[in-house]
Length: 287
Image (cartoon, rainbow, N blue to C red; front, top):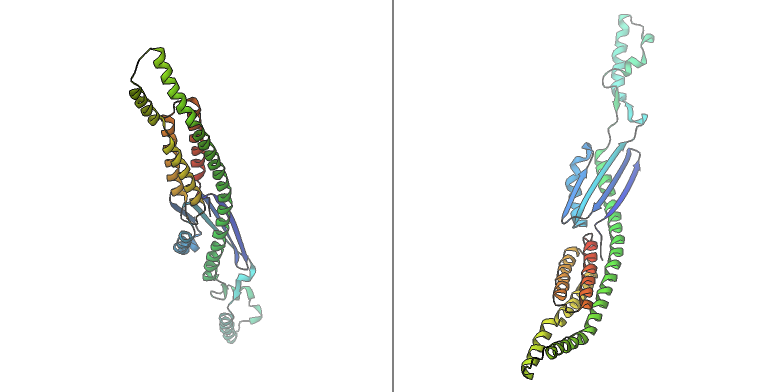
């Protein structure tokens, strides 16, 4: 499956302890380059995040941002009942001194150190939830990369079809081009009234035909196009192999241009190079 390196996803999880939000952005890059932005309280899960990312993605610059907003609720404030009872028992002992216990302010009891406690968040649970949400975010990111990859593949295949058409046109014209070259040479010799040995003349014509013959280049263009189609059908990362094949296609198009002896083949060579460059630009985004 052809996958793009460009995608975005945003996943959110709301629980009683707060809200977790992952944002993943992916753009093209020669290698895998991850960047994580994490809350300080969740920084120690970065190693596990990187490992999971490497297993899911092989290329691309990935920016992964995690936001954590704790739930602000009065239920987080609790009373340490045993501590409160200890304080009350201590104050009751003061009754023997004549202190009127009816005047004891309950708020003062709560203000005693250790009576009021703030319930702590279960960070292990939150970290596990962040990892699980990251897995879901990766899956969604991969789905986005696959959707765009399918579109890129269609664009590339359209250009491959155009290359096949252009190669077929040049191949069909070559016999006429070579014959026109032979006739032109004979006509020039006749105009200059040069009398050459027929065997020598035929030898020169053969040499010129060999220099202008582009059958090998056309065959290699067809072969490279077939290989590109084969690679597009493979699973896993294919971008680098496709990029190499674009170099090979471009090399054959340049050779075809250098051997051109008529305007038609020159235009065809230019058209081939335009199509190859268009594919190369699209392939830069393929994983």
